[in-house]
Length: 475
Image (tube, rainbow, N blue to C red):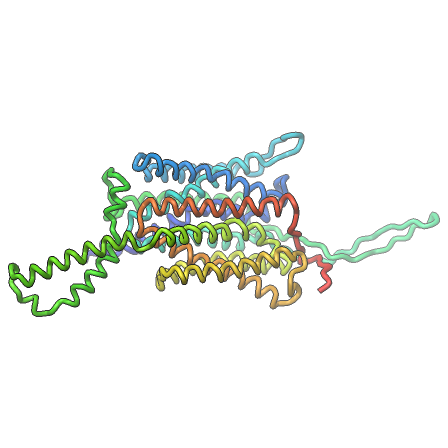
């Protein structure tokens, strides 16, 4: 085997990881940078609510792609579309470096029109990646799908690490004294009071530098995609996508089944003549076995099982992309700034960690995936409960409380990430259209979660922010 062929799988794994990282790195980067951005822009802490709505408005991108696949199959060149959306992401990220602080007056009040407009384009790129990047990955062998999901998980973890090194949102509690003058019967007396104030520690580098890092990551994504389209086994001819999907019949499953069949053949058959009746009958049986295996791969899951899998996709993504991200600050900040950053960074690390576990221990059992979804939902319920109790959650002033909330966020992210990876692998082995509809279910679940949480958080103010430096909790 030549060195070129021996290193090609490793290089392809690296390219698939970088390509996956570019799928959501821009928006994930903006989220972890918000603690600094909101101190500058006029919307303040209301900015995350605007950003959440903008991300959902960007779902017009995946909606358009899904409708094209439905009503004009094979008419859309997937590779050209991916080139276009990555290029848009690079341009939007580049412009964000220079114009993110620009504001305009609307209805007499300043608004961050430049930041929100560019965030819309970045959201359009990232949302559309769910229904374009995944179907493209089916052109490669199945093993690279898990690597892609690892990269997608790193799209949140890597910006989180950079933000931690930047010192995003780090605070210290300072005991300050203030003098108050009181006048009684023409006599003025000064008295001093002591109070705890929250002081933000200056960042190690600017927001513009962080946005430049996001731009570089998008450029890497473009370069990785360019080389992925040129790997030796990728089909380059313009052929009907549906025909390609129909022909890509679970090669790995068929091969393993055939190997089992061949291994059971008597060894003395090897000495039989090519034209012997015994060998002819055996080849006929082998052909029938092959046809049965190929047919069974398409009927592996019933209609009810497919509906259950799509439900899992929508439910899991409604939790991970909609319900819980809206309240992470409310559930973690009452335990201190360190608890918040550790839960965010380690929770992001749990995503690629779960992908690695899926690579080593792939389990497609729907019972297992359903059970893991239930466990992940239970951890999410605990996180939601602590957010609802903010600013006075359980065990607030105990190390155990901070430990529990961090572990809960890690296990919430890890269990549901494993479910998402395995469902992606299942649909990859189904067909091209199955992956497209899987991406649509991802966005539908995310939309439901976000639209449910937005009024609760931003309109009705059900959740109350907690300050670890100022706490008047009774316990």
